[in-house]
Length: 156
Figure 1 (cartoon, rainbow, N blue to C red):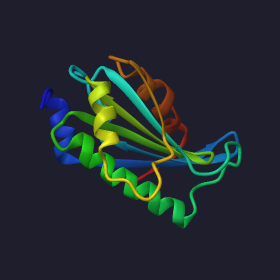
Figure 2 (figure 1 turned 90 degrees about the vertical axis):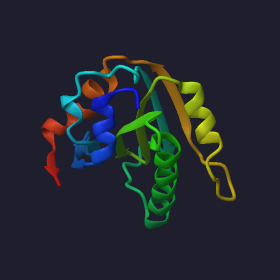
Figure 3 (figure 1 turned 135 degrees about the horizontal axis):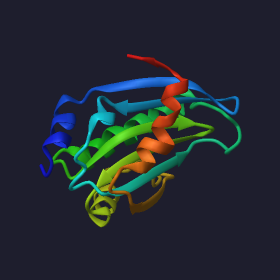
Figure 4 (figure 1 turned 180 degrees about the horizontal axis):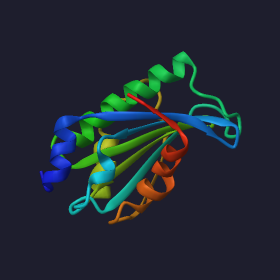
């Protein structure tokens, strides 16, 4: 582990859930608790977003039971590939408007991509899109993802 605060969050593995609507489309946001209290993001300055569209954008649809099973299996494999040694941390998972997005922080995007490539696959490759950028202050997570929590009803 590179960072004691991150190590603690990974070890505790506690999540909160918020649900609500943005522009009349429902969303479900899961995020690590207490992610907002993290002050030391050293060793996790790179943002990797992974998007899996399961229906057409603009539909506002949440996943069907079949899509949910595929998304959950992918997420289990993703956690195993990235988090077992603290290489990366999934900080939030947002399900909205026909897609699910995983918000991941790491120090090595290339190694994350390699680990994801080496994950077990089903018959077809995962229909994911990945984007990376520098984000040492975790601004994407704090300002663009978690801002919806203030207007949503959190649940345990």
